[in-house]
Length: 327
Image (cartoon, rainbow, N blue to C red):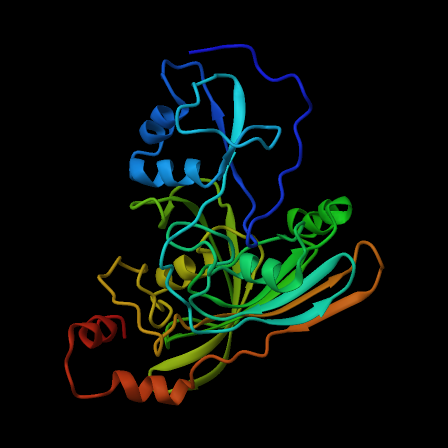
């Protein structure tokens, strides 16, 4: 169903409780009402949820005017909606801010906290927490790390200078260092550089290695060892999703407490056993001020000796057997 579109200029919609609105394009399809379209397009979301959002004024047009439950479907326009999740699970770990100026913010993220809203996490994300804490609606991550990973995340404060910082990552002029705890492979000669071709795997959130042109590169060295485990220093040259996790698994040293690699496991989240991967340090020349920056995470991985002792425990659970298979 189509009718004349509004001619007034779109407005920038504000954040709501730290959440920016999501945007969706209305294609030329046959729907009686906007509610019918939303219920069909987002079939995993109950129709009653969309009714509630419409009743609360959380679905708006390009001018910021809320739609009604019986609003007709008008194609060829963008609409916006605010996500909210009832009884969202609280993540019991706090982020810290290591640096802030008028252009840049550096946060130190705990394990288990997503960087941006996704899935069942909306308020309990690093971005939303920082927006609510600081009142900076234009705050945006310059890069991301996995929810399971702890450590440094850089944010842009000023949209006018954002691309200058994003260029650091595009042109690989920023130096990132990670730490990870994984099994000790005595057949590896370190330091070394590992390269592979990575593509999307199955399920959709996993990555895999395939033959073909190389598109991922990681430099590895060893920091300390104890028994059959070691702490590694990792320097990703490229920034593929799950790159460090995939590369270490391919080398026969999957990161401790990784539920995705080398195989997807049925793993109940345990806050006492986070993925042993930490975004430890970033170094770069500030493209705006020219200042040489070096930031180091204040967070720590578990002690290598304690991990070695944990996996040497005589109780043979399925988890323990899985880990021993990789030694």
